[in-house]
Amino acid sequence: MNNGVQAALEHTTEALVIVGDSRLAIQQSLGVIACRKETLLTQLNRHRELAAKFRSVKYLHVVRELNAAADSLATETLESKVSKAASTKARLSELTALNRIQDVIYETTAKAETEDNHRSTLSEPMREEALPVPELFSIFVV
Image (cartoon, rainbow, N blue to C red):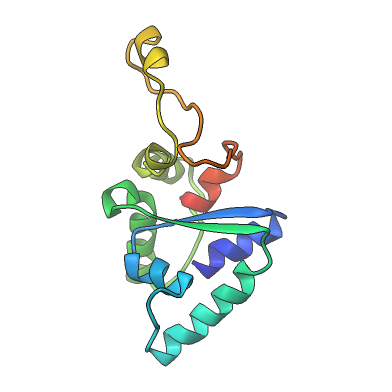
């Protein structure tokens, strides 16, 4: 999570939405649940330092099926023991297809679906605060 937060800082992002499939990690980040492992506590403290640099940070828990792109990258990293960015067009396309986070964050409009033969289109965010569809959103998700 910290690598993504650091990348957002480097892109001078002011407001951040962190989406994850680990309810424990999100609740620990929010301070709802205590972190008892010393090694993880170091990472959590670093995360809090980084998150404090944003105007706002929101956390969203999603089921793993919707976060399959991140799950695929994490599995790949664990197996190879090397963290790397997806660099080939084929891998990027695969991760884009796996990513369904936008299904949770944005709702579809019934009118657009009817007019476009049931194709989904993005409309207003489901949250109170208006969040534009960021150009770099997929970079942080995949």
